[in-house]
Amino acid sequence: MRVHVVSDVHGAAEDLARAKDGADALVCLGDLVLFLDYADHARGIFPDLFGVENADRMVELRTARRFDEARDLDRRLWDGIDRRAAIETAVRKQYAELFAAFPTPTYATYGNVDIPSLWAEYAGPGTTVLDGATADIGGRTFGFVGGGLRTAMRTPYEIDDDAYAAKVDALGPVDVLCSHIPPAVPDLCYDTVARRFERGSHALLEAIRTLQPKYALFGHVHQPLVARTRIGRTECVNVGHFNHTRTPWALEW
Image (cartoon, rainbow, N blue to C red; front, top):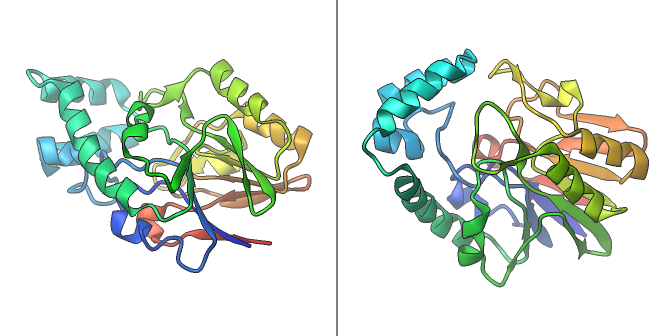
């Protein structure tokens, strides 16, 4: 059995369509939407609406952790625009292309920049969406936990720690623990380019320590200080920033 795993797709629909090539199934750990590409500021919803110069400035402020100034810039740019309608229109356009690219079968969960309420409209019969739920893939139990924890970035699908922990607890024992964000291990959470710690989950870390799944797979941190480590018997793997690598991570048994 061979499963390909991707995360942080961020608009890479053409390569997503080929991500299952040579595998029996595809697993996607979220962040389909491309709001602002930190590597190419001309790509994404934000520059499409406000131009590259404003995208450059927003990236500069966020990278410097000057979040109050970033929010001020954000408010000025959106003044007089129906933010919700504009973003939903742009996200729908991306989702139509991305969900059409998913191969069969695909098992997917949400990232922190995704909008879960829209997924049911676009997920076809070959795509199974899971969040706080499990699926049998090739005789192994995969557990899925979507979204992220609350941060100063205020991305669309951030939830309280208790709600996130409840989803982790709902899984029970699994062979492969799949999440968008990493467990709360500093080396796994530090982004060497953004120069900041992303939020990892203590609930995921506790589940790994207690239940010892064979693998814990995640994404979210685009340029991690450490992409792979072991906690007891569990191999913890950042499967990679698919928008950058365009290459899935492979799991075989």
